[in-house]
Structure formats: C-alpha cells, structure tokens
Image (cartoon, rainbow, N blue to C red; front, side):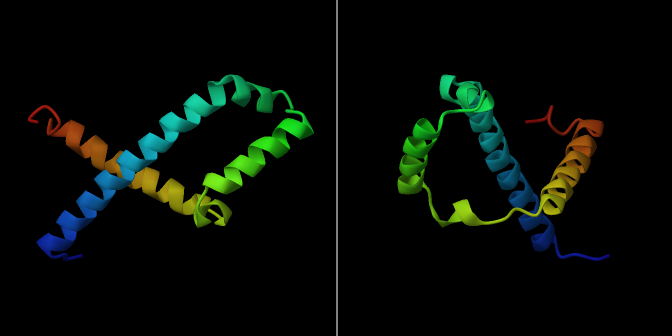
Length: 97
C-alpha cells in the first residue's frame, strides 16, 4: 500500500501520543490497585464505602465513564505499538535520541 509521508507522520505521532496516554493510564491503574482503598476493593469493600466512593467518582468523572471499550481495538493498538517498538529497537533508533 502507498501512503503519503504526511499520513505516515501523523500515524506515528498518533501512536506515540496513544502510547504515552496508555502508559499514564497503566501507571495510574497500578497506583490505584496497590493503594489501601484499592486493596480493600480486592477484598470485597463494604457497601457504605463503595457508595461514598461512587458518589465522589460521579462528581469528578466525565462522560467517558459510561463508554464500552472494544478490547479488540485495544489489543490491535498494542500489537501495532509492539511492532513499531521492535522495529525501532532492531534499527537502534532509540539510541540516537
């Protein structure tokens, strides 16, 4: 397939941005999961605490909290990023920064 250079550049930028946001989310998820309250959730948090957290969550979250993620799209993105990173490492392009 043939692509314009500008399309390739934009796709690379989008992938870099997406990876950065995904890593931010992963780091935040790790912090949340390992926190005192996160551990309480893993051990079945009581209904009163869940209700109080949920009220606060509804106050701070945006409309995105109700969307349904297509896990296939997330996996596809992950596969794309892995292929790009493997190619960069193979060509030592990260070492030149």
